[in-house]
Image 1: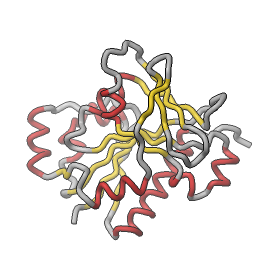
Image 2: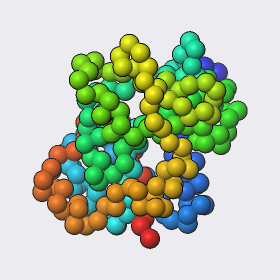
Image 3: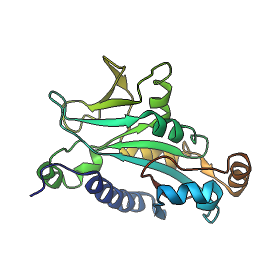
Length: 211
């Protein structure tokens, strides 16, 4: 049997849970866009999102959990990817999704708790903490116990506290409009100002219809 949880396991199962849970709690339609990196680069921002109805966009970067000697799990984030995701904060929420279950057995046994126990970290917060640091990658840890949602990030030799959110927090942000609303006017302006897009790695976009 597989020993360690893969990134593919994390995003397939968590996205399924997100769609079901969000639709059940809010009654809104949720759709997932999953362009390749090549499609993002060739289509640009307008090509990716011009056909969408008005709504909220959330960009999700799912990180594979790795074993850590003292904490629940660790994750690696890269500087270039973080910079690009954080740069679109005025139009969408860019989030790292950190599932704490390293072993496949624990992941399967957790069931729905994989989503409830996952930590969601705002890419802008990570990028703001990167200022003045030359390292091209950093480590985020998920603190004991599982379900704590407490995360820390290398600075680079010590670990600093890193604010995180739960999935329920993300739902509440959409409900209170604490996530940018992508309107036709904003898409047209963004397309004219910054026609390029992509370079984020494997990114999934949740499109949530507005009221």
